[in-house]
Amino acid sequence: AHLDRIGAIDSRVHAFLHVDDEGALAAAADVDARRAAGETLGPLAGVPIAVKDVLTTKGVPTTAGSKILEGWRPPYDATIVRRLREAGLVILGKTNMDEFAMGSSTEYSAFGPTRNPWDLDRIPGGSGGGSAAAVAAYEAPLAIGTDTGGSIRQPGAVTGTVGAKPTYGGTSRYGLIAFSSSLDTPGPCARTIEDAALLHAVIGGHDPADSTSIPAPVPPVVEAAREGASGDLAGVRVGLVRQFAGEGAEPGVVAVFRETVEALVKLGAEVVEVSCPHFEYALPAYYLIAPSEASSNLARFDGVRYGLRVGDDGTHSLEEVMSLTRDAGFGPEVKRRIILGTFALSSGYYDAYYGQAQKVRTLIGRDFAAAFEQADVLIAPTTPFVAFPFGSRTGDPYQMYLADLFTIPSNLYGGPAISVPCGLSDGLPVGLQVMAPTMADDRMYRIGAALE
Ligand code: GLN
Image (cartoon, rainbow, N blue to C red; front, top):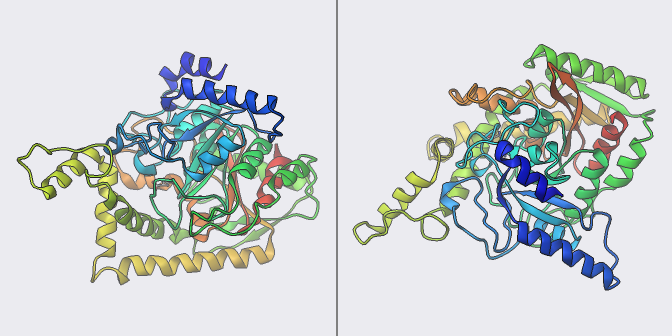
């Protein structure tokens, strides 16, 4: 049914870069066979899922939205993909994304943008717009995204779906094509909080193949989602981040956010105002740290090892082949990040830019720590604005970067955060973001479920 749905509407939505009909049907048959053989499978066995094209899938094309990886078929599965298969989930295909997960609208995909199912003339968010749109358009009940600065939560918010960024290190990065290694966090996209929690429980937990994976069990996210569904938040202290409660967001978003705060109070939550004075520096710090790490990570795309190779005709030197390949294979936003990152890391500028940004990162962590003394979770709108029309922010990179104004702090800190649909502004979805302390992922699911 989901393959039929994709066949019927994906020419308009373009959520998928690759649909694996054969693989999906074989995986579904395999689940039946495992059940028939007496194997006890988990609650998501047989459930179809879409996977962001930044995670490696053995033998199945993986591009990260870039021409430089066109035609590459990875020889191995990412840990998360392996866990999906072991749990019996059926992978439908790979979803569209901004090239190397750099962007907020999927307009930077080398293979054309994804459209927002709510309004096909608007963006579905990014970088994981394909995963969010697939879920919103009922092409897949679940999807995997990755969140470096907001790429699960922001697409969730603008497509009216649930998107959760687990604690950094709570989900494995093995087999995730690296953008910014100290920030990249895979996580679930779903239509309900409980679905997201069930998926989180399948993909989360320690992975010895990832050196930054946390050696601890997944927090009790499914239990928390079920507990929250009772709608009782008595005794829960919700911290409203003063700096993000009104400023920088469009009026329609602020109005929906205020109504949501009132709803939390009605459910019994105690809402306290908290101040996080360094959050306003999160965006500039991120746009030094993330491009710096990206400039190092993307050095591996040299035209020798993967996908595209240009100029290998016997008339060019190895160096020329590398630069011709990179010139043809990388899009403008990726080139901008590499140039920015190598500049920030160069001697003479390192302390002033990269070093300074790392200090800001520490201060943001301290803001979170202080705020969590007063509150169990923090809330803010997920995004400053609803889904915008195509082309309206591509002319000025800063306008595009602003989409992640409210999501970036929790990436710099490393704690979990979720976006929950909370209303409409001019007929378009608005998301509430709930941020929790590291390894307290269960708290955000409880609040989300209570609001649902
Ligand atoms: N939009 C942000 C960026 O362009 C975040 C991307 C992400 O989370 N992958 O870097």
